[in-house]
Structure formats: C-alpha cells, structure tokens
Length: 196
Image 1 (cartoon, rainbow, N blue to C red):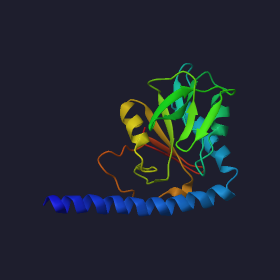
Image 2: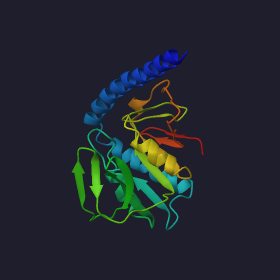
Image 3: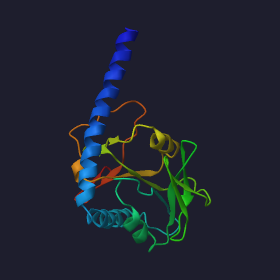
Image 4: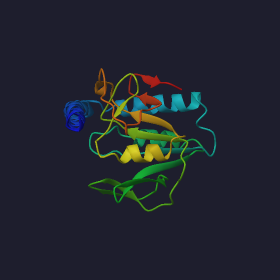
C-alpha cells in the first residue's frame, strides 16, 4: 500500500515535469516573437487592478523581475509607478523569496537564483504577481518546480494572487499536488481569467 502511494506520487511528479518541459519550450518560442505582448499584459493588469480597486493609494503590489523567457514585467512596473501604490520586487535570498521595495532607480543584482535587492522588505502585500510556466482555466499554476513561490504564497494567503503568462502556455489540465497554490487571476496578452 505504501509502495503504491510512493509510485503514484512519483508518476504525478513525472507528469508535471513532462508538461513543464513542453510548456517551457512553448514559452521560449512565444517570447522570441512576442515583443508587444508584454505591453498588452501591462495594459490588462492595470485594467484589472483599477476595476477591482487595487490601485488605491498605499496598496502594496509585489511583482518579479523577468529572468529568461518570463513575461517582461518592466512595462507593468512603469505603469504601476504612475499610481500611488507601494511596489516591491521578489528578491531571492538563500532559496527564499522576500519582497523588497522597488523604485525606478533601485539597483538589482541578477544571480543564478533570480534577483537580489538590498532595499527594505515590504511585508504583507495586497497583490502578488508571479511568473507561470503553465496554467489551466481552473487557475491552477505550474511553476519551475522549486517551491519558492508556493512558500511565499502560503505565507501571504490573504494576498490576491495573479499569474502572468502567454496564452500559448495554457494547458487543458495542470496536475495539482497538495502543496500547490492556485491563482485568483491569470493575465495573458489576450485574456484575463479570474475568480474574484
């Protein structure tokens, strides 16, 4: 019985890894030909945040700095900077994520784990925006597999969780395990998938 459970879990992880490999290739391919998509996603983000009253002065919005083929958040950062919200960036420190204050002149250090920032930590963000490798219409998220975002999302359960992805990263079904945390909203260049 125990052996069967272990095999089942391993099969599940293998299934996730196969899907992850496939969707990483799709993301990279789309990234090379989709220069305008980052602006479309920024436009959709501001539309959504404004509609849901998240752009209120003093609200804390956490994003990530793009690495590799992740959706480029720089247009979103520029658009958010026009509002009186507190913006933070995910800083990877000793395999953990901390959200640190971002301003247009903030210095970033890119390393093999992501981005490191020396500014003050911003705790309890109202909105967390994270990169996706894949997603489905049920708002399940497929990440890199390291569990870093799962930990920070679990720690900030009251935050509204938004995923950024290209529409080509959509899957019919993303395998879900106990530790996986789904999104409240997923924003692509074409659509806003939302359960709020």
